[in-house]
Length: 212
Image 1 (spheres, rainbow, N blue to C red):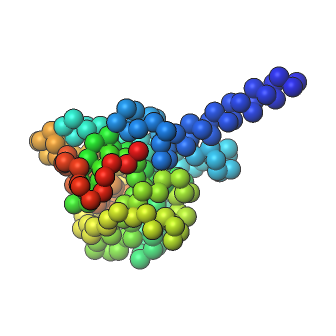
Image 2 (cartoon, helix red, strand yellow):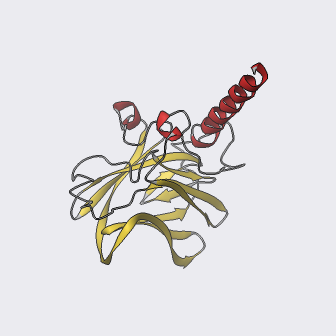
């Protein structure tokens, strides 16, 4: 019994260390490995059944490797924007954990310069446009966008909203090819709303340095 308890405790400790190593200010540099999209096992929510699954997309911009990890809520007949997701309120751009973008080399996202590292994305939705915020904080719970999280913001951008001809039931992120190996668009779609974030490979900004 004592040996079993020790094994369980060791496995839990390993899972917690892996969570911090892969999702947070990493022990593993993004230039070496991005790692899988992991649930935040430091939160009690992660040990219960979830209505919104955790998903991810991995892609390249020239020689840079990128990965987006995000929760995928389902509309299930509910009014989303202006309803489930209120207007003029900070939203985690998904469900559960913060939506996290990992980049192995410097890029720009919606005109915001990002050195290699891990970031969280959140937005303020409005009917005609959204405001995107990018933060170095990745270990907070999704919608716990506190003053401490906001103090780590490195940029914001205004993005126009597109109206889709048909409703998308499950919140979806996907990559739109621009016909260039160094430039794509990261699209988020839900209900009849789509926003597009332009991503481009760039050189490292001298005023920001390189994140671990």
